[in-house]
Every structure is written in C-alpha cells, then in structure tokens.
Length: 261
Image (tube, rainbow, N blue to C red):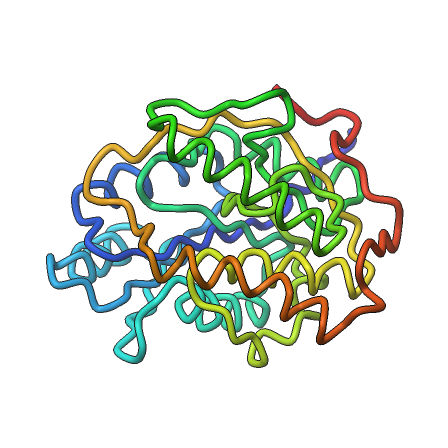
C-alpha cells in the first residue's frame, strides 16, 4: 500500500486590529488538514489582537505560533520578521495571507498543490488570471489595482498577471534564497519587491485563480503613502538590478497544470 506524505504547510498572517477575524480565520486554516500550521505576526495591535492570538496558540498548541512585534509598524516589516523565522522552521511550504478574509482559506490546497504537485517555487493567488475576480470593491479601487499591476509589469517585466496579490505560497527553500533582511519596501510595494527578487533568483512562478472579497471587518490599510511608495519602488528595483528585468528563469506558468478551481 502506498502512503502519501502530506507537505508541512505554514501559513503566515500579519495582523493589526484583527481580533474579530483572527479566531475564525485560524480555525478555517487548521481545518484544511493536520499538516497546516499558522504563524500570526501581530503588529502591536491596540485592540488586543495579540492576546487573542496567544489564546489561540494555547488552544492549538504546536499548530499555532505568535510573533509579537514592537518595532516599526508596516506590512513589509511584519513579513520580514515572520518569514525570516518561517524559513528556519521544519516545514515544506510557506504561505502568506491576509487576516481579513479577503483571502479565502479554501484556496490554500490549490496554492500548495501548485508548489508540491506542479514544481513551482512560488504560486500566486491571482485576482486577474480569469478576467477580474474581485467582489465589493468600488470602481475607483478596481481601476487603481488593475492599473498598478499593468504599471508594475511594464516597468519590471514580471511575468505574473497579479503582481500585487498578497496571497502566495512558497517552496521554503526558494523563500530562503531571498535576502529578506535587505528589503527596504514596506507597504504593498513589499509584495512587488519580493516578486522581483524571486524572478531574479530564478524562481519558477505560477498563478492560480482566486476570487478576492473585500474585508469583512475593520478598515483597509491602503493609504496615500502606500500608493506613493508603490509608484517609485518598481523603478528602484529595475535601477538596482537592470539585468533581472523580464527574466523568466525556469519558464513560469500562469496556470500550473492540475491547479485551479
């Protein structure tokens, strides 16, 4: 009889004022299977999210861990700290997802299968692989997001259709090759910097379609400063590593075979 070895999956989710969402999200992630673990990285939330995360870690001992941050806030800084820890852990796959349910945990097996089953180093949960798959966004936000992706692809030559998606799944060894401690971006531009570095190190990048649903509770973290940073970061990346522009490394696939919904 053949026994299938399930990959060990760590799901990293940054939090800031997500106390209402976090308990439901963690349970839904863990329900994907016993091979799933969660690392919550809380950015010193004033609403008590950190205490909620600690309670979940006690309830699901061995499957939920918490990283409490007290330094400079921001999505990029949170991910640098969390992913630096993740690559040292005994896991096969590391996933990134938001805590606000804009990223549905039911897609996690598809992303993991893209890495384990189809040989990708990075699989992106893409909102723009099959047209536009976004729910509850105002027209202005939708136009901004689609323009941002075209802008990033034009400047950097990145192969992905959704360069700014935060729903991602990495082969741990590929993630470990990225110089996380050298990253300088913070907001959503950090996601673009990660992707550009992945392309530069020859990662095979794939995408699977998802439906993105605007957050259930709380407030969006989009701000004018985040938008301004996102305008300049692609140029900075290309100027720093011009030979990486448009590099494919191992041929990237936009829809890995056997993956999708």
